[in-house]
Image (cartoon, one colour):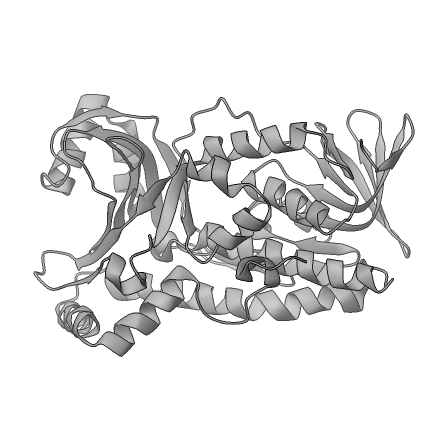
Amino acid sequence: MDNTKSSDDVVEADVMVVGSGAIAGVLVCAMASAGLRVALVGGLADTTVQDGGVLAISAASRPLFEGLDLWDDLAAQAEPILDFRVVDGVSRLFLHYDQADLGFEPFGWTIANNQVRDVLTARLAMKADGVTVIPASVLSLDFGTDGVQARLTDGRQVAARVLAAADGINSPTRLGAGIGVIGWETGQTTIVCDIEHATSHDGFAYEHFLPGGPFVVLPMTGERASVAWTERHLKALRLLDMEEGEFLAALRKRLDGVLGELTQVGPRRAIPVCPQIADAYVGKRLALVGEAALSAHPVVGHGFDQACRDVAALAEVLADAARIGLDIGETGILMKYQRWRRPDAIATLVAAEAFNRLFSNDFAPLRFGRDLGLALVNKVAPVKKALLQRVTGFSGEVPRLLRGENL
């Protein structure tokens, strides 16, 4: 039974979530687990669309999905990452991690974006108590003293105490609230696609740094892998425009036989690399989540995990406030979320940009220094472990949902 109060024209909830991606769905589940009434405006994107996107869920984020009772359904379609290697150009020096470095547990799992949305859609279709899904768009928003009200394209209105915007990098909600961003052009574009290959990947992932940008391969279920190939804009556009056979040949050359013969390439997508962070994570009765708040360079592969931390932190802040009868949309409450998440986001943004500038060039002195650095980190166990903890998300103040605890 749905506990959100509603009439034919007005839906009342504690939290209004705006968005149609995986993070919007996870956010709804997290808020509902805290006993909050939630209205999802937008619904989740069509799960039949094969967009070539893959999400990487680190070991640190797994407890969130376990606590929300989503993990079993996700794990059935996910591929564990058991080993990964970082290589710089043509150097023979590298940084390598295997399962022993994390107690023989996977570093993470990869799963197709549309499969994650499929699991979430099925969960939301169960019409859990306190959840209303509204497949409509926002026409206008009114941020008032006591709450926020949205007028929708289907003629209905939603009234809530707070709005959580998970509507992507070009967030219309963020724009409408007058929150700016700090961002820049990198001159790079990432080509994303899935491939089928003849040789088993055995759960192996690797990141190959090249002058144009990182070339990343992540294992997927079966004899499949996800490729994220970052290059300068013009070269990336040429890769996007290639006929399938020509693109396969370019991939074979880049992979250098690692996965054997390539038999198929899925749809290719081009994603301009434009890192940015919102000037503020919160506004009047508003909190930004996921790419609406932060979009870092894909060189660190942290995007989905950062968004999961946003979800867990915001859900905890609002749940704690609601438990003692406070107004969950009050500015002081929302500022707790900003103070928790924005410093970590800034650190991630800066680290990703530093990595990109350090490795996306062919300057000989830098190349020598970074290759030596990779080799030293690979040999010095404490440094190697510290870097692993940062990469896998085991650092900083961890929200309860990510510690395997209830809200």
